[in-house]
Amino acid sequence: MSNTVFITGASSGFGEACARKFAQHGSTLILAARREDRIQALAEELSEQTRVHSVVLDVRDRSAIFSTIENLPEPFKAIDILVNNAGLALGLQGADAASLDDWETMVDTNIKGLMFCTRAILPGMVSRGGGHVVNLGSVAASWPYPGGNVYGGTKAFVQQFSRNMRADLLGKRIRVSNVEPGMCETEFSVVRFEGDQDKADAVYAGMTPLTAPDIAEIVYWVTALPAHINVNQLEVMPTAQAWSPFAVHRE
Picture 1 (cartoon, rainbow, N blue to C red):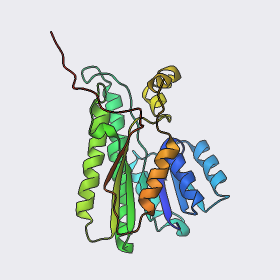
Picture 2: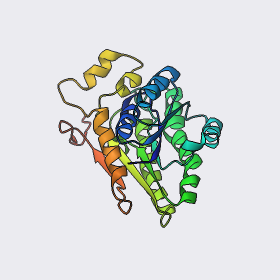
Picture 3: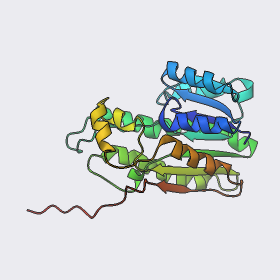
Picture 4: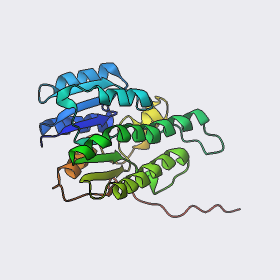
């Protein structure tokens, strides 16, 4: 696949795995992340396989996103695939006790960051007559759990925004896909629990979770399908995860 792919949150987890997967297939890569040392190291490694441009970028910074897109080097300007991966969960407290700062960070990253990147890149896709936006959602968009409050709400936004984009872009040869993973062992839980590795490990104890390469395989497959096929929404869980009975509080 010879495409130019822009990946946010590319320094770890799904983003890094997606970068490696697309590199294997010769895609030109634009890798964006906040951690300069990690994104530069990844770019240097993958540049042995394909053409790579790395940018230090916080998706919450609207002006920085638009400046980055406007000032891309010529060989990287025509973005074919946008992988909106940057996102996070913070905390598991109930809505009556959760940190408003955490809530705001999740909204700014998971919602506004995704909007900013999409709005900056989409017009170029439309003008060139093709492209694919892949949004990384979560099963939390559809299936609530205690402490999921704002995180689940942000992923519900991603789900509905993806659907509405499909409606907006009908006839413009732009594909939009929402990939919604369940339990997946990356840095996700370490971030959620503020670096507490023991708490993060406990989340996956005794079961086999998904991995970042599993999700990268799905993201690549979705984009590699023939142009007339659009995977609207793909929900994936590990075999060891499923739904529970309704919770009932009894006096």
